[in-house]
Image (cartoon, rainbow, N blue to C red):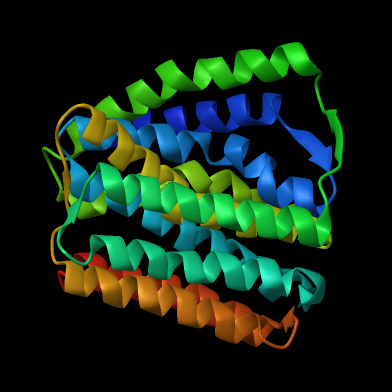
Length: 288
């Protein structure tokens, strides 16, 4: 099992490097609408492949707990540097938090089919239109140039396949839920390093995380449902009532801590503790 965990860590680091090759800059609207397609590509590809490999719990956990962990990253930054100002991007945060309820609604019957995927992707489209009209979309530049960006994006496909195979091997030793959380944390772990070292001082940085959470809730799982539907199958959702508790807890905690337009160190602790509690109930207490 130590080999599988080590391989998972190395592959997660590789996917982060590939995502960095595709790093680009822009305004708040761009960082919320466009950039998350790049930053969440590892989670999306891994979720789709895990579902197709017959590991729906690991796939769902990979996406949902990636969003929860991204919020914990904001909490870590607040604990490290003090108050994080999110006043201007609160509407984007609320939209992203409410998208969790869209996932809750389509998954409540215990299955995710093609129509559910269409609905989730439609929610992403509505959120995109809202952000575009409210903030505009202004692209700056690719940090390393367009050619490395394309190479990085294309290279994520085989890297995600290797990551999926490693998670599959890990499921031979531990439950799917644990493997999904491990995958979610490792693919997002570099974000913690960035948040702790550099902080999250810009609205653009916060917007990119809010956009990533939106994509984790509706794009990653929505596309997985679409692909599964095209292949003539559905995604089973174990314990949908308990999944509703997880999603509702993430959304309400998120809205609560950003309701005053800033996240203090105390509220940062709340975000981190909420993630740890969800992990505990998701695994030890069998919440999902």
